[in-house]
Length: 253
Image (cartoon, rainbow, N blue to C red; front, side, top):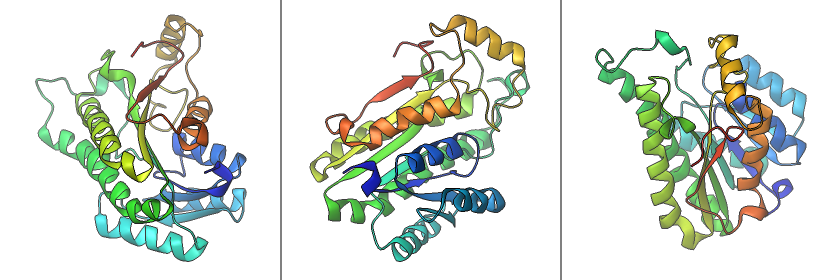
């Protein structure tokens, strides 16, 4: 199914990386459901900017009932099922380096919060999407991960653990849903220059990372968004259960 024939849900789609993914999809003619939790103004402004094939809908992705209502509302507004899901939403997290707690002091509550957002959120959206995807015998799920699995240079213990669990879910879901024509993949970036979450990172850190990458630059949200399009498009039809690192070549998976 071409991107222009799809309606795609982007969780956390109003700000930062999510907004870049939303704009990239709209550029290619896809219909986009812009999910937001608290960013109503940003979501509605982005929907107005992109036109009638962009719809902002509020939902807490960790609440299965709210996610089910989101899918119901989207179907009522578009007349079509959502066939693409981008699990991008990040729950209350800042990439603030040295300010993050080390392993000796971090609380379980931080892990639980990130697991709720990454795993429970993705499970809720996948389960809510299944009836529509099975109806079409076509579906694309793209989970946003991190290159910190392979290169844990900063002690984001809670965030990295949750994203590692999301990679496991990606692969088991890919095996489970393949017979239904549904692919499930992950895209893992490094620090992006710049999003709301990475704004606390000193410029010197960005410059160091740029110097270490083969491309000599830090990946931007727009560059990452372009890679998301591949996994939502027909060109990825034989690719599932994979983790593609999109960080300018810094980490080799």
